[in-house]
Length: 334
Ligand code: MRU
Image (tube, rainbow, N blue to C red):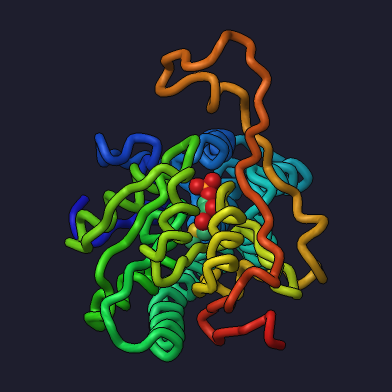
């Protein structure tokens, strides 16, 4: 496959995923015809990033319909398959949101479900450009039109979406407006979405970057090396509390202390309209092995217990603005 990065696609009536566990060493695509294999791929982070797993989940419902037909499953069994897709990862609301959105089209048949999944992908693609424009307008208005050094955490680019990205989309737009000096990319332990994925995307786009260990981010911010930090989100409550990759909270606190902007950039589909605040957001806890082993090599005493949350929650008071495809919302001031 060539051209722009496509983390999630629908090719020859099959969900196709770029295997993000292999990047930057290999660019390999897998196609899926079995729901359990898609669920495994979502859990293993073959596809990851809230908007991308939303789109993948929507297409997976079409796969479920095809599988149900092939295996003569009844409608309850089909609904069970669809439930399991929506539950594959708990924190990113985009997954259950997209699955429920396409599920409503089941009575109208497979082609209606597929069309709705395509529509979710189209909307996501469009939202990236809009967030890029709104976010970079916000930064330029607050900080002036000069080349800025921006810090980001995890991966929020084309690998995490079907667009130019959320936070990384704003960063790309800043580059195209000659308003970007350099990107500080948090490594993003333990699965290295920053150093493996964000750095790979920036390298492909000729955007100047440097990678730092997560533990160096607070020092970079406090020492005045960073003009603003931008992250994505997996779930945003109505009051602006935002769950995102573990380590985001430390960045937010440091930005608050240093008095520099901390932006959360995410599509409206990441806002959970059932939540007033973030206190009940389910934070996914991942396995001990992600900490005790690195690429299969033991890096801690055998059997060590760990604390391995995949996400943390940044209270709205530390967020300068939430940027969506519709608005720049300054919660702390509202
Ligand atoms: O565990 P991951 O890699 O799925 O976590 C992803 C993040 O935390 C992203 O920042 C978030 O989903 C936003 S992606 C535009």
